[in-house]
Image (cartoon, rainbow, N blue to C red; front, side):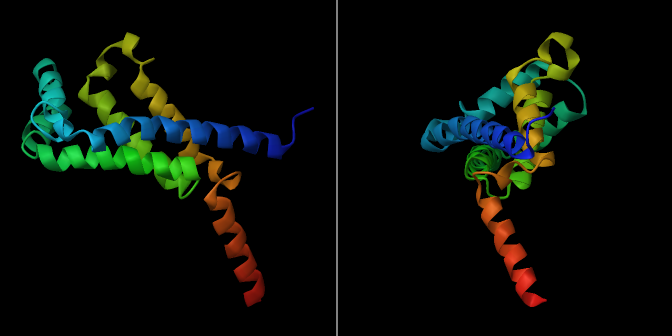
Length: 161
């Protein structure tokens, strides 16, 4: 006999909150650290990885990201922070999950992890998988603001009839 759907939903909320805390713990320190936006911050990390990599994504890093380090530093810091807020609060969780997947995929590609089978178990792959859960499952419907928005929408559409 399977547990009730409510039990699954509670565990999904736990995964969502954990994932939100993960992204916040990476985003907020970047926002608070002015060095992250300088040449030794994100740009330095990308430069190190570009020197070791090859291929079309590597060319994108060299020709686009490293040419606009300030813009991409802000995009990364704010992307991680807002993804964390979204998932922690359960607000627009599918969007938060998709952005988290996008961020993790970019980190994975930047590091060239796809080229080494032993790297698949890394932190970026875990972040991708956790964010994927919130992108495809309704993780914000328990202990989340998505639940309030959904109930308000249902109430409004019932009143329109």
